[in-house]
Image (cartoon, rainbow, N blue to C red):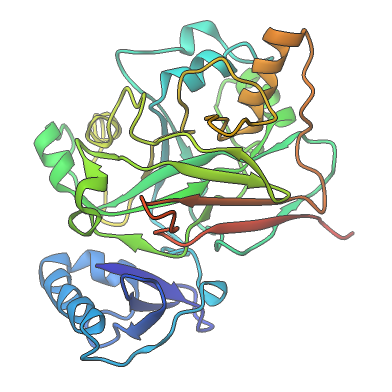
Length: 335
């Protein structure tokens, strides 16, 4: 089962069911007007949506062409967006950045931060920045959308609450990270709107690509049309999504529609850019720069500037982008 949210002039958009090949879609209006409404009534909505999905794939329903460019983020606004840091190799690389703290490298309990969820970006929405000197970075991640989770949830409860899976771009303004960390209240100005792939997929529909509460697929990243990285999301994920949900629910209940991110996908290696044919590469610029500093004594890869483009997609064995691509360009805010 694959779902998306189309732009319809309303804040939460229109929920549609998308075919397995992402070519067609059909309105889910008779089940739920939007994705949050479906999540709030999942026991009733999920089997009905799954049945529509089956009919669409069997061509029992004609549907209409699916255009990801008119899709919003699956949840254009969410009750809560929580990002974790599940990949130890990412923490090991970025902890040397100015403003980071060695003690924040944790392997026993995952780090979490609460991001802005009132305005989540579509896959094709531009990355708008207020200035061109803020060290703009992308962060390619996997995320899950969950049902309600009680405070103090067990791993089994957390795992059972995972409703949908997708990928995202957790945009970072690295120059502002320093100030945010120094003020002691965590990320705020350094984390603008997060962008999401146009399609979310139920774990059961991912087949063998989902297991152990992890997505086992490479995430392909291109910057300005050139391959930047293709780390496998299932490799080196020290904390799985059940771990992250359990930690998030340690002191609070989590509402249906909460989004939990796994952090920047990162695989251990000693490579630098440009990426070789068999290279793994990086899912953010900060990692590439720290690897260059270690090897060459200085960073050579620039941060994003106005006019640059970033494309992020999770690819199956046939090389197809299963969630649709995040395809964004950088735009300087006009004054």
